[in-house]
Every structure is written in C-alpha cells, then in structure tokens.
Amino acid sequence: MSTVMDDASFQDASLRLLSGGEAEFGVHIAYENLYKSIVFLAAIFVGGKVASNYLLMPSLVGEILVGVALGPMALDYVYNPEAFVMLGEIGLILLVIEAGIDIDLSTLKLIGARGVTIAIIGSILPIALGIGIAFAMGNDVVASIAAGSAFGPTSLGIAMNILRTAKIINTPVGQMIVAAAVIDDMIALVVLSQLRSLTGDVTVKGILIPIISALLFLVLGGYIAIFVLPQFLNKFVFAKIESEHKRGYYALGILFAMLLGLMPATYYSEASFLMGAFVAGLTFCTNVDAHHAFVDQWKRMMSWLLRIFFAASIGFQVPVKDFADMKIIVHGLLFTLALLGKLAVGFLVPNFSTNARFTGLHLRDVLVVGFSMAAEGEFAFVIAVFGFDNGLIGKDLYSSIVLAILLSTIIAPFLLRMTISHYNKITERQIKEAEEIEFNRKMELGGAADSENINEQLLDGISNNTTVFLCVQTQSDAGWGLLPKLMGATARLNLEVIDHRSWNPRGVNTTLMNEIYAKDVIQHSEIDGVDVALDNRLKEIQTIVLEVFNQPNAKAKVSRWIPGVVQEMHEEIVEENGVVTKRMTSTVTRKGSSISDLIAKEAEQKLEKKKEQ
Image (cartoon, rainbow, N blue to C red; front, top):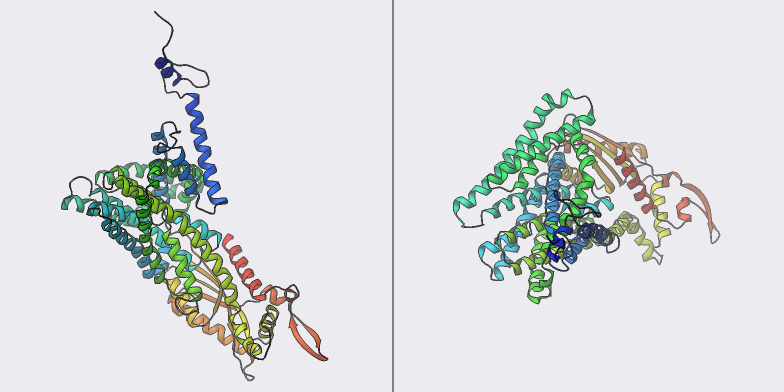
C-alpha cells in the first residue's frame, strides 16, 4: 500500500491539524483558518473604534464595513462565515433580552400620551413612506410592504451614546426619546411577525395568525410578565434567598429557562422568536438583582457578539458590488426620504421651554428628537435581511434598502451631534437674554453690549435682589404624563430653567424625583420688602407644582439657590472720569468669563453629582 498522500487527501488531513497535532476523531481547525478568524475579530474591533473615535460615526458602521470587506461578498477572507453569522444571531437574541430587561416602566408612564403618540407615529409614518416609495419604483405590494417595514425601527443604542455624552438622558426630552425608542422596538417585533405571513401563499388566515399571535404575546404575555410572574417569583423563590448576589443568578437561570420555552412557543405560533426573547427579559424589568447579574455576566460577551452581528450577520449580506450600480444608489437615496417620517414626529414634542413653539430651545428639542428617532440600526437590518432571505424582496431592492439604512446610521447621528453642539451655544445665550434686553437701552444711547456690560447687568440684578436663582426639588409617585405637565408649569411660572434632571428607580409604581435649577425675576415694593416678595414667590411655585402632581403624598421644596459665583461677589469702589461710584463685582468678571455660563455649568455639575449618589 502506498503511503504517499495526494493533494486532496493532504488538504483534508490539514483541516484536522492544530498546532502541529493530528487526530483521527473529534473536531479540529487548521492553523490558517484559526489565524483568519483572529484577524477578522481584531479587524472588527479596530474598525469599530476607528469609526467611533476618529470618524465620529457609530461603531457599527466600521464593523459593518469590515464585514463587507472581509466577507463572502468581497475578499471572501473569513473561514466558515456561517459560524460567525450564528454567533451574531445569538448576540441579537441577547440584545432583545436586554431590551426587555432595560424597559423602565416608570419612564413609559412619565412621558404620557404624547410620548406614546410620538413612538407610534414615528414607526408607522416612515413605514408608510417607505411602502409608497417602493411601490412608486414599480415593486409589487408584498415587496413594498417588506421594504417599507425596514424603516420603522429606531436604534436606541446609537442615540443613547450621543445623548449620554451631552448629558440629555435624564432630561424630559431624553426620557421621551428613550421611551419612544423602546416602544418602536416592540412595534418592530410585531412587524417582523407580520412579515412572516407574507411568505408563501398569502391568505387571510396566514396574515391574521402571526399578527394575533404577536399581539397576544406582547399584550397578554407582557401583562403576565410585568404584573403576575414577578409577584409569584418574589414570594415563592427570591424571598427564600438571602444573598442579593445569589438572587441575581437564580433570576438569570429562570430567565434562560423561560427563553428556552418562549422562543419555540412564539416561533411555532408564527410570531417572531425574538418576541419570546423580549417577553422573557420583560419579566425581570423590575428586578434590580436580575439586571445587575445580566450586566455582570453577559454585557461584555454581548458587546462582542453584537460586533460580530454587525460584521457577519449584516456585513456578509451587504451586496457591496451592487453599490456601483447608479440605479441602486438613486433608489437608496430615495429610500432615505422615508426617514422624513421620523423627523416629522419631532414637531409633536411638547414645549418644555419658555420660548415660542418651534423657536429657540423648543426647536432644539424638536430636532434632537427627530434626529434621534431617524437613526436606524439593529432591527432595521434584521427586517431587511428577513425580507431578502424569505424572498419577499429582490436583490436590487434589498441593496437599496441596506444602503439607505447605512446612510441613516451615518447622517442622523452626525446631525444629532451637530444640533446639540449648536444649541449648547444658544442655551448659553438664552440665559443672558434678559440682561441683553435690559441693556438695549444703553446700546441705543451709543453704548457697547459686550460681555462685561452683561455681567454688570446680571450682578446689579443680583445685588438688588430682583434676579434670584431657585432650586425646585420634588418627590412623587411616577404618574402618567407627569414630566410634560411639570415642564408646562415652569413655563407658566415664567421660570428660566437652567437645568433639569429626573430620577426614578426601576419598577411599576415607583417614586419620581425631580431637581430643577432656574432663574427668576422678583418684583417687590418698598412696603413688603425683598424677603416677603421672595417668600410669596416660593410659596406660589410650590403650590402650582403640587397642583400639577395632584397626589396626597407628593412633596415639593422650593428654595433660593445661591451659586458659588454669586457668593464670591463683593462691592468695590470705581472711579471713572472723576466720578466715584460703588458697584458689585465678582472674581469671574476679572477673568473675562460669563457669569451666566458659570452658573449654568455649576447647576450641571450639581445635578451630575446627584445622579451618581
């Protein structure tokens, strides 16, 4: 018998070699293939960091581009791409579980009907526009519905990174964006289930069953997950476990046991199996121990699996060569118009400022909400890939949709970051508006409205006790639509809000805490005096705030806040043109700084410290 191996036999044998060893059984990987896998993982990590740190784009853009370049559609460098796609899908399941665990029921209550309306319209309107655009391109009804459905979801992760950096998350607008994005995810799961009904022969029964199944799991299953199962588990399981650490791990065990049951239950009932993952996570949205255990055990692994999801599950299926086709590019640009539906919902945002509607800070809130909602992400790609894999949309249409989604992940975050940066400067000027108005008289007489004059005007108002700074602290139950009502009250009271944050623990019926720093103008007479006028104003604000809450146990404390800048004020004697006068000054005026800006920064620092406590 010959002992010489031919080329084919040698290649087969080499696949069983690792680090020079050889075996006749088991599963082994060749060194070259292992090395390629490590290179791919390293490239994903570097690509994401380059995109986020240097190109100011979401990291998923860099990860997708790495997957496109190294995947089957381009260089075909990655060994066993199906394995990486599977790992990415596991990451997606963990992401959906986290979406369920992370739902803050109190926040959903606080944003009220307006926030829910923004979320629903923010999903339905882009879908409708996407369907109309696809149909206008000559696609049939089924393909148009599948194409339009990809433009409904909102990527909370993309917006969260920017909003967290800008310290907007705990503001009323930030809470509204978070809640709206969460509701969008729920709608996306229902839409994904509905698309299954369009595969194969379309019948009334085939359309109704997936929708009814998805809604039953979401509504009825969600009710059981929120109001029934937590009470049962707390009473019969967690109450018997003394260690918080162990309670978290028991909760994770129960969560994954539910996942193993709910995924096939939703799949075989013709809903999306992701709905099962969501409901399993939703069961523990009020369980702090489960939340901490999930983050502790799975967060870092999930971040890697999601990198693989974007690079492999999405990147491997991006037909990059088709992007050279002008028809694909034009259609992709046209599909981005569907995102106008996301931008439009920004105009539904309540006016939390003292500005006229759609001007000043209210226009900022409108744009921040619109651009945050316009950032497509994980679920948009999932829906597009589902439509393509199941034959609902063709390759050219799929390519155009993917291009539009990629553009949204680049353009929307850029515009969001630019809007926040631009309006941060406007916010600083907004604080000075009252002083500038008062100083207009001097300008008409030939004066110069420089920063020193504005500081002097503010200092004069403070020294005369006509300009005061207030701190409003509230504690109440987290009721339906409380945040918009509270901000409406501050506007009616003509308080110039410098900064506002809200906090609430996880749970269904929780306590809401607000802290607002504001500037106010006090009018007082010689008879009453400053102290009486200020005391009356504080009582007026407290009364109106408590009326807004309309809760017997609600508490509101309104006190005068004296910023550190104000504490450093002192009187100095100035001689100008032979005239000796007394005026108030502060050390900051000597440094050329704006007192208003420093007060705003001090309020922000106090609120950030409060959040960390």
